[in-house]
Length: 292
Image (cartoon, rainbow, N blue to C red; front, side, top):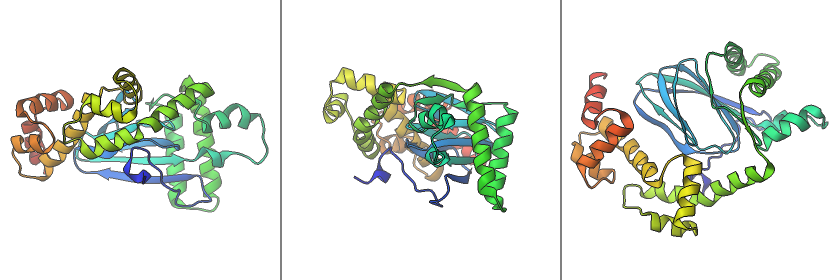
C-alpha cells in the first residue's frame, strides 16, 4: 500500500546528509491546511501571522502569531486556518542524526528516549522568549546557508530540546506503552484510509469495527484514544472540511453542498457545521466573500 495515501506520512529530508527540513507555509483561505497525519519525525510549527486550530491527538489548540507547537513522533495531527492570511514555518527534525558516534550519558539519558518516542512534550509553547529566539535563529541559519550553518542549526536544535526537557515534558512512556501506541496506529491505518476515501458515503460502526477485526467496544475505545473523537465526530469533521472548500470555491447552494459532503439532511448539516465552526455555513460563505 502506498503510504502517501494513508494517515501515515513519510517524506525524505531534502538533504540526506542533514537532519532538518524547514519550509514556510502561506495560506490565504479558511479551512484545513493539510490532511490529518502522523509520522516518526519530531516536528515544530512556528506561527508568524494569523490564527489557526491545531489538533494533536485529542487536544485542540487555538494558536496565534508567536505560538510554537510541538508535534511528537507518532502523534496524529491536523491544522486548520482560521483566517485568510496565515503564515507559519514547519521544522522537521530527524533525531537520529543528532546521535554521536560515541555512546555517552547524553545519548543514553536523553537522545535515545527521544528518538524512541518515550518522552512526550506538551504541544503548546506560548510566550517563551528563549524558545522563540532559538526558532528565529534556526530559520535564519537554515535559509542563509552561510558557512557553518549546519553546525549552528544543530546547536540551536540541541538548545530547544534542552529547554523543552526542562519545562515542557508532559509524559514519559515505558517501552510497552510506546509499542501499544504504535500498534494502535498501525492497526487503524487502513481504517483511516477507508474513511478518508469514503467519508461522503454512509459508514457504520459495525462495518468499520469488522474491518479492524476487533469488537465495536474495543474499536471505539482505541479510536477515541488515538483521535480524541468518536467515529461519528471524526467523519463529520472530514465532511465539514470538504464543505469549507465547496463553500469557498463553488456556487453550489447549501443543500447541494450538504449532499456532496455526505449529509442527507441539510438541517443536520447546518447544525453540525455551526457546532464545529461556531458559524452557520451561509454566514461562513458571506464572511469569506466579503473578505475577497
